[in-house]
Length: 280
Image 1 (cartoon, one colour):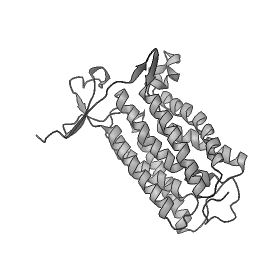
Image 2: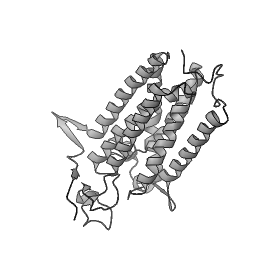
Image 3: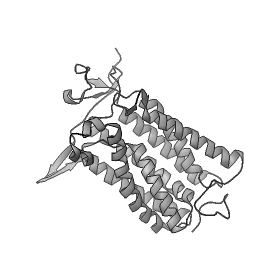
Image 4: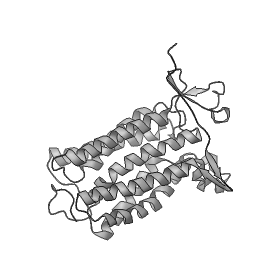
């Protein structure tokens, strides 16, 4: 048997400050939003885009992404909520889907870009590093909630799951793949890649960072999702894997469109200089 390298055990879903109950999931989401807004504003200033646009956009994204993430999850877990409608809004108990958040956020960003008459792809490039960093942080919410874990494992690194959180039929199995950790580390790697491209990329075309995010994040999510025991399903299909393959395809086609065909991406505004970095 291989020696134990790391054993992860959740300390619980929250903590008390006097009469106030604080959930780690909420703390992590709030932290991810705060860090993300500041990072996006910093990146905007480096590209001569008004940083205040990113703070305004953040409000739109939060208002759209969090309900969309919850709605996406509830739709695919409808049988768990149909008898208790009030639980549908209890996001502090976990149960949000990042693909729902991305979809809702993308729709909000498109509307915002049209209203503000700014390139959607410029905004997407500035948000992409913050988005993947937020995902890396948010995955630790799954750790505290003892959810979204993988299949049983006896590897030298493993996650202990309490009896009441174990899948049916696996009540006697205590240790599982820490898929929250796999995805968090993968996302940090994607974040490093995007930041490298942002600062070192030579005259990147508008849209490159977001399309790279789609390919890189989706590639990791596809294989990690295959380890999980609680995937949202549509028939026999794991929805996250289907969406990930779609994301890889869209990102790859978009990058080929930019660099293979040397054309600018369709946008909500006309871009007089599609090869340039975002401007004010």
